[in-house]
Length: 267
Length: 187
Image 1: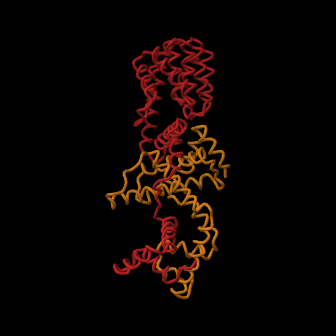
Image 2 (image 1 turned 90 degrees about the vertical axis):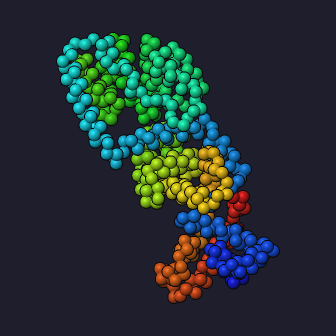
Image 3 (image 1 turned 120 degrees about the vertical axis):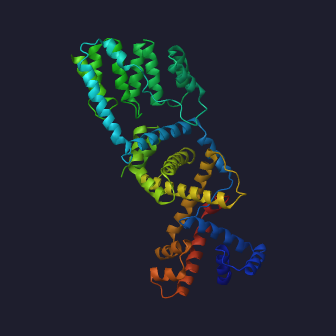
């Protein structure tokens, strides 16, 4: 490097804005015909941004941005984004710093007591009656996340489902699943229930099994809805067997409800 | 320490259980960091999701690999994204002519190139001697020469000034010699 120490010091002062107005003007004149000095300034500016713990060096434009951008707009990236968002929301909601949880546990505990009472005094309900107690489907999470306006197929499917038009919902879910790279657990859940409502039991069981085997955080819901399917089929043994799997892990979906239902079925 | 590929594969296959594991391991630290640095819970969530997407985009487009622990890498990526966000806000406030913000995908794509450039510069700093590294870190964080002399046990400010001069030239040379410096120079 052939820049003198003096010139480098001036450049450093220039970069940190320590030069007087006149000295700054003089330095900028020097910059006009000294490429080496220009390079020095540019490297040092960048070093300053990268090595300072507060600054950041922004990229303005680059052909490479486009390649990265097109991946970020792909279906694969969108599916990943949706999965991360889902886990994020779940994690944040369940994190222990959220004080509301304590009260919701109390509420759950209270409703458990209530439900146990309910079943004790309602002896000998038939399988179908039991099924009717649980098939409101209001607990299903919405498929449409905020800000995601692109997926009209899913919106149509959910809409038909809510309006209990299961034939129509079935068509939309089918179309969605066939065109998707990965299918979220919640979509499988809806699709299984659509089969259940249409009395296509084998298809319902297959779909719930698919959900159970998936890597979705909701996979244990598959056991619950599979058990409901068996109830509707009036197959008590299979329903009990499925619920037994569910209650083997307290973190499974509807753990307490499953226990109550089991007691009831064993009567 | 789990193999970083365990997490990368989990993300690639959208395995929500693995993603949850990542949250359990790293998110509390990120949240703490962001809250300590002028941010809110929502900022921490945003940065965390973007960092994961950033890593996976690099894996998909540039066959990127993580050689350290996944957790440590993710933490640095989050820290940088938050620093970027703070600087962006500063620019928006102080500079009316700042170009209009791009789409989210474009912003994230730019942040990836910036992160790569940042990693390149860190790598180069690791190549100079330990003594130079310590002095330069302080210099670039605007620590006065006098304070540097005290902290690193130099006799006087002028000795520090000379060391900075030498070390900075050494670092500049190392950076310029690397072919990646020019490749990435478009930034």
